[in-house]
Length: 438
Image (tube, rainbow, N blue to C red; front, side):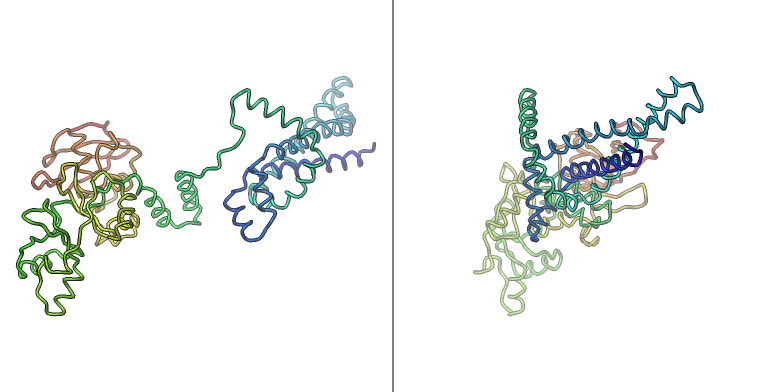
């Protein structure tokens, strides 16, 4: 066999090996969601690739048969074709016996290098750049090879299945997509610029609805504007002017004795029609939705849907009212940074290293703003005030401080045991004290 014929055979083997490399990486890297989109758009080849992914064993058996057979043939042909020429070249430098050994080694390295670069690295990089497109183009040829090599595929497949069973390994890959998978994909999309950072934030906030407790987004008890059942019209008007909200609970005596709620729109219509205002007037008082304080925001949304309401009163295990929540409060949690700063001013950044934060701010928002990797005793509190109480093990006073993860939390203002303002300062990287209490 001449040198030209040998090189032609080596080139053909490299091309076939490259085909199997692309076939292997394209099936493994193809995204099922993208393939499903292609199948729904009318490409039947995508449906066939999806079936291959459901049962990938025979497919990869054909790939490995092809790759290993070609590797052996390539070594045999390459050594026989190139060794004499490399031996002659080495004979110019060293003695004959050593030249033969060096020629064989050089031909081996040359053939291996060609196969690594041209039959493995290059085709796999090409396949990774557009795996779905490559997979649908090669699926027909791979199906034909599956039929031709059926007996060998069956034999190797049974042997492999027996090994999997003996070792207790799963034979099928888990195709379930979790919320963590979706968040990872959206984060990758945000980093690549395909997804806006704010869109990624909204998607992340949606998945937080299952973990955030309703108290993290509520209006706390001390900020609730409510009516007594026998309040005169002048008192109602004054309270609406002083505290303009969309909904007002109506109570008998105190806030824990709920009778229902009135909608500001109904009151506004009565004012326009020159009708008197009274919380107990027919058509004004609505039955209030009451939810426990341990529900998640996702569960509250479901309660809103079932009750056809957008307002709820939150009570604790002792049936005391701890706050109220509206559908807008939940959606503001989802929208996160998209909310108008005038409506969401619990966290105010003073400069690059300090923030002024309301004590009732949900700790999830504080953690996101400060980019804290972890929190101590997670699950024991919902707000920044709860975090400080947990760390201090008492009700904080003015000037109390807590150190955590390079941040200093200092209580600035306390109103009747309620933590109003906390100054958070980031320490320089080289001057971070260990976590401690002061």
